Length: 295
Picture: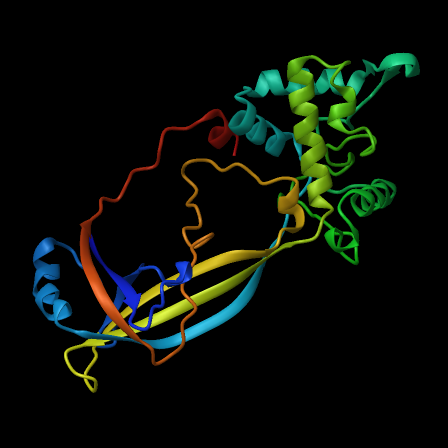
């Protein structure tokens, strides 16, 4: 299939960095969604769009929130350890067993550093949540923990919720404090469990969102083409200040995130810099990784 992007720039640009050219994609023509099956479908529009007038038809601003992921279950721990650390499932469970059974951490003797690692429940005790809220307030500030502790529930109907989620037995045992007592594998897995749990108890990340619709046509009264571009920028980091999930390669990333768009208003005129017709190919699913196979 083919897409058609237009590189545009504000006519009244005064050299500000935010006024640099940006690209928008053709999404509608004569009120219908655009679908180009081949190059021949695109070509007739290029000559018209080269001569067309462009103006901003609509600007929508808003906010959206992104929630942290739940604390680890056995399955999600295996997935994330595979993506981030390159551990297979067996290695993950062996190291988690060591952290659960106990590690000598100085004069305190052997201490179990994480809760039981075979669980399909994302729930945590109120005591652990209270400790997490105290830690988050001390380290990040009160804005970084929500007013009410979050509740996580499993989607699996057959889940056995006898055990809590996998979490550190104390969030006040920061990974850096345990470097001298843990092997490399133990430290990396403990850090993953600790960060995921603390992040799960933190506030949502907040994004400012912006969607711009641009009309194009040969005359001011007849503009059958609609181009669109969206962007989002972080307004408040929330849990992202500590942790962000890794993703399997078959999960699409958010292309809008981090895209900076000019400060623009409806009715503003734009200059066309260049048109970019591009051919794309639908991709088959990638081969399974250890993480995506577990998922």
